[in-house]
Image (cartoon, rainbow, N blue to C red; front, side, top):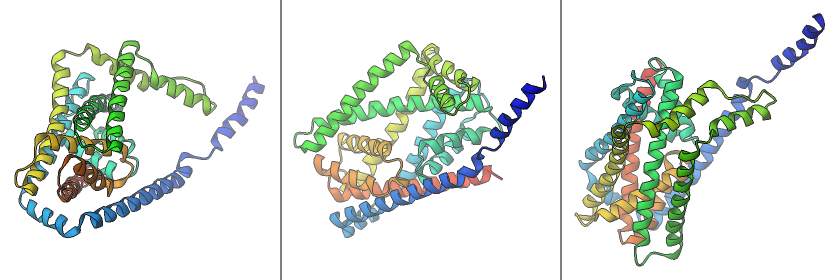
Amino acid sequence: MGVPKASQAPRRLQSHTRVPASASSPPRAARASLVGLVTALVGVVVLVITVRQVGWPDIRAGLAAIGAWFAVVVLLGAGRFAARARSWVLCARRVGADALTTPRAFAAVLAADAVGNLTPLGLLASEPTKVLLLRPAVATAPALTSVALDNAFYTGSVVLMLAAGAWMLVRQAALPEPLRLAAEGVLAAVVVGGVAAAWAIRRRPAVLSWIAQAAARLSGRAARTPEVLRDLEARFYGVTAWPVGTVLAVAGWQAAFHAGAVAEVWLILSVLSGGRTSFAEAFILESTGRLITVLFKVVPFRVGVDEAGAAVVAAAIGVPVTDAVALALVRKLRIFVLNAAGLALLARSRR
């Protein structure tokens, strides 16, 4: 009996002599900070180039024209966060996280968005922040599951939004060939994604379990799936058994989130153009902005890329480029205001 104990000792010693996670975290944090700094600098360069090409005096005049309407823009932005919070609450109730109230979810969504915008990690930073902020009231497993479910509904709504925007963009007669190809590429990706989603719903692959087991094998540990991941997968695919009314309610709040964004774009452009903005133009610009958000989340606050993207699409659909750049800057200011509120809520929750 003594031999096995002696043989096990080196293994325990070896496992204890591994580099602690805390020792490797500073280099990782430094790399993340470096990536954030580089992408932010690139964004600033793109912003400066875009502003110089469009003309700062015209953009400044557009920003000044918003005036008191900026308060309405902020309220629309807050309403969109409230819609996401309500969707999250409905998802949480289906997994037993009844302690999540709408005010608590709203505060967590505000704080998480600020964290996601401030770092190059995007969703990898914002969504865990939601789970951490719920820790006093909601257990980790149901909190994680509810966040995953809400994001699944959100992803589906974004895909539909992008498909509708790309379809409307393709119908523009004078669309430049590169932009047309990009829109057609989005439509093709949506079709592929829809087929993959239908297959996943039918076959219910244990993706998280496979990833966890593969990671365990690579690290030399026994390949097993944590209970929390198995529970998350079971509850995730359990959406197909939800009452139709609940699914429609969650989808409705996600739709309200996007409708608020289109209304925000239409309002700003209408103020800038004297009411000469159509719903189709606002929808196309918002769907383009949503695609930029998805593709360039690594850029803090998407500095530069929002403005450049809006300018390119606006020129293609006949919207004044100066108005489009001013639109992007006004929305950026709205993000700053709401993110400041989110950071204040985050600081208060950590006391």
